[in-house]
Length: 529
Image 1: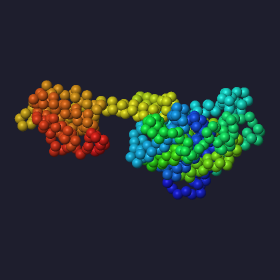
Image 2 (image 1 turned 90 degrees about the vertical axis):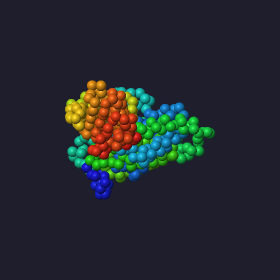
Image 3 (image 1 turned 90 degrees about the horizontal axis):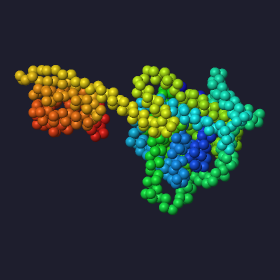
Image 4 (image 1 turned 180 degrees about the vertical axis):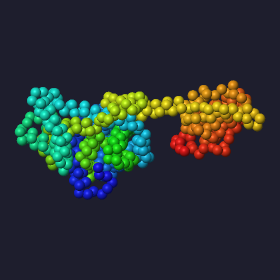
């Protein structure tokens, strides 16, 4: 696969262009559908895909990734629009963009590396299932009734034919992306034989054609662009508005950022390259600020379209740019042609994306996983489908972190021995394992100040104090020995431990001759060797 960091040659340019056109075709029905979900005009979704897609393709940190209006965001936007109106939505999108820029500037995007593999597998599988379930709504006609009879048979036949072309064509030739060829061929057959198939034009609007939506006639309100600023209700700019919009903006920021960064990580693995998380956050934030200012619903990375793009050979920036330009051409010029594309062809394409996205090997991987990791993977998959990506990923990371903490809490061990020092019998405790919030209870329970001799040495050479809880545990232990009237010697502690153990000045001796040069995370510092 071509490295996106290399200069474009003719083959790369061709692959990026053709894959971009394929993605543009797949974006049309989804952008329209997501706009309807959010409760806004279809053009709000289409222009969001164009604006956000273009800016992130040019300035983003992950070439080949497709960004547009997203269903995960649309579900949250729907409640804001229903309760307060579209103007509040556009302000929320701008605020989401500002927060994402802050995330990038503060370099918080790097924390995506902390997402465990089990969470990533659950995320991928969960999104594949969401894409799959979303396609079932396409088996309805324009009146919202489930297809039946010949209409259903034609739909199924088109889906099967699309899947067959996408699967078999690469074995014959790779000159044209199989997904694009499938859409064009299936559309030609449907038009030529005048088959009674549901098309993009049928789905775009219940009251008109896609072309009528382009000029704002299909849905009340139309698309206002920058002019939405002039139609704001009196008193819009107030603290009350801010408090209404802020919670939605924060939720949109979390969902959009997490979905984009996890999609970036997935594409990194597929292309054997590495994207720039913080650069992507800044570009995504700038794109959403622009999209909100132009009165659109903004967006984030789409795993389905990104997979279509990468699998079609689009790994460079031009693929995302050509997708945005292609969608703009469709909106302005070719809307009447796109109306003829059968929904079944696009559903077949998305079914293929589901097959390619779902990590089928994860079931075999589960056999080699611990029970905890397998549980986390299944948990994230289920939560992604039932709730949303943000809830799933955050829950998965929290559970994985708790499992990690519990497992390492069990690894705190003590080795005891007796030595002669200055004619006194001294008991030596050698601590092995990490000392942090989860292990301090086990650590404290291993000592018996009342039964120990008058002089005790605790050696931390093979241990690491990771947080303030560990320091507090040591401090509390010194107080117990002090109360018992016994001398305690602490060896090999970090500088932070020495500074914070002030309560032990009396009977506690601290040996600083061989202290380690690591830092304890007491005020935001990272532990490091």
